[in-house]
Length: 131
Image (tube, rainbow, N blue to C red; front, side, top):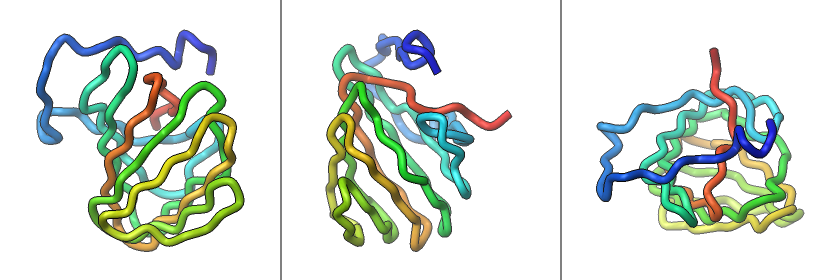
């Protein structure tokens, strides 16, 4: 995926809801194939950040990958998620926040169906959807 494919145009709207935003079923992230089902909704895209609503089905493996051109902060709303970030492992439960800075390897496994919010800065599309 080249840099122009990663660009997200800023929204002209000021409000968004999940039920009016189309989900995208991910096939890969940073060129790494997803192992299970994950759907992402781009809630709002600004000039400096993007907010995503993410659903991970129980059993999803998000294999080890990294993002070299942005940082991510996430917050778990529902479920349990095993995370390994920069070699540190922990179990996220509702109310847990985490981040992965640029260039840091990370991995996740959905131990239950999960729902999370994710903010990337600067805004980048790191995924390719299923056909």
